[in-house]
Amino acid sequence: MDTPVSMGMHQEFKEAMQAKVEKLEAEDRRLNERLKIVEETGKQISQMNVTLQKQSDNIAELSKSISSMVEVQEAEGKRIKDLEDAPIKTLNTVKVAIITGICSCGATAVVSAIIAAVTGG
Image 1 (tube, rainbow, N blue to C red):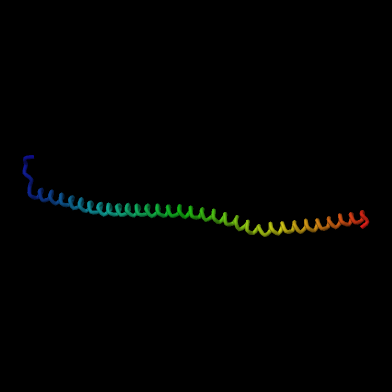
Image 2 (image 1 turned 30 degrees about the horizontal axis):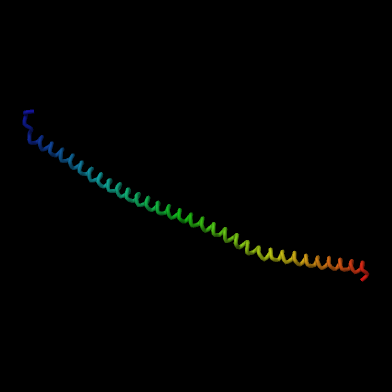
């Protein structure tokens, strides 16, 4: 170890070390670029997650809104059916009243005729 190193060996060692340093610096630059790409991808994924969450919230609100609309339509459908059925019920009531009136007149006529026949009248 006490032997001095020749200038040629020293120069050769220096060049070898410089080459290794240059390789390490180049690899460091490549890794830094890759790290930037990974960080940018992470940001994009994070933004996509936020967007998807907002869309999910919007879909949930839309689903609630549609459910509410369906309930309103069902209630409106029942009200419309009731309104459509009202004239039919009224007509049926009128028919029953007319038939009852006709039957009452007929029964009254028959009873009157029987009473007139019996009383000789």
